[in-house]
Image (cartoon, rainbow over all chains, first blue to last red; front, top):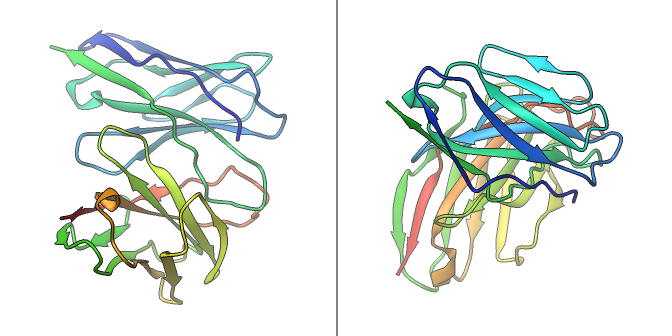
Amino acid sequence: DAKTTQPNSMESNEEEPVHLPCNHSTISGTDYIHWYRQLPSQGPEYVIHGLTSNVNNRMASLAIAEDRKSSTLILHRATLRDAAVYYCILRDSMEYGNKLVFGAGTILRVKS
Amino acid sequence: ETGVTQSPTHLIKTRGQQVTLRCSSQSGHNTVSWYQQALGQGPQFIFQYYREEENGRGNFPPRFSGLQFPNYSSELNVNALELDDSALYLCASSLVINPRSSGNTIYFGEGSWLTVV
């Protein structure tokens, strides 16, 4: 499985943008980049995913480097509810359609 | 609200016993996976079922087994419980149209906390 590298933790002020980086230098050409987050005492929650182009949805934006060896999850205005563990995951394009390989993730703390 | 519900939310078992955890997926989701999450760690993939057949397994022994039913529900069974089996068990479901594509969105339940004493 391709690996990702994320900072252990980050801190942000409420109402400010947050940029969560992820390195994935061994990504293959058909791997999707997925982001999930896990709030305390809850299951992981899908945030966003992309292949090559930058992606936006109501929760966040995903900026993917041109060489695809890194990406950044952008929360445009952090709120206290965004405090969670954020996981950057590469999805193997193999016959398993539902497998996720979680790393340690980034603990995001949001200060009021 | 992901539409994936799990039961029970918490349970305590004794070492050596057997446990069955249950999951109800979103209607129409043909793929279900189970994950184990130890305290302070990320979830670890146990196995997945696609159209009621197991088609992927992580590094877990055979005493971890499962079933997927036509009504979008599934079970995780663990035999001969060990203390290290104490963890949060997560069910995840999705609609997989192309099993060779990894672009589908996966929806998780809130998990079942298992404590083995």
